[in-house]
Length: 144
Ligand code: HEC
Image (tube, rainbow, N blue to C red):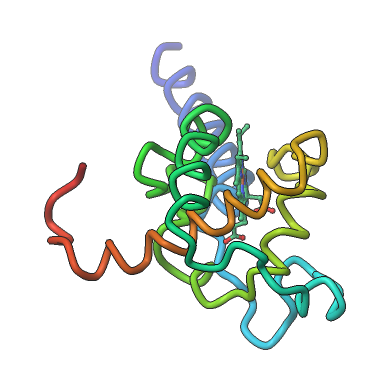
């Protein structure tokens, strides 16, 4: 009886893994397709605060209160929540990131941030983009 039970449990475990291992695997961006299907017009929008220190600081504050819980304090990502500080996102145009933050991806667990003022959403983009620079200059082995 016990052996049968164990076998059944193992079978269920295997089925469970087969179903969930796929969707839980790290998601990769399909190269050559627009970022989350951002419209070209949105992607072409210029960041009014590009590289500005005050916007980076404001974005950092906003990030800590709205985004860090999911994306990680250092935007390193975790589980199915993608990193923002490094990886494919750093090559995405600011306008496309702004568009995506506004819209969200509720079917995948990313909330819409349309309720935040546009200024704050651009500041978040500015902060996110500023992280790639610090990630390459500071030691990658140090997790802060
Ligand atoms: C409740 C958890 C959660 C919160 C809070 C959250 N995110 Fe996300 N975010 C996600 C998930 C999950 C994804 C992946 C969605 C997908 O794969 O379609 C994501 C994706 C993203 C992406 C796209 C990354 C990529 O490489 O595709 C950006 C940019 C982003 N989030 C920015 C933000 C910002 C900025 C904030 C704060 C204003 C924020 N997120 C808050 C869960 C969250």
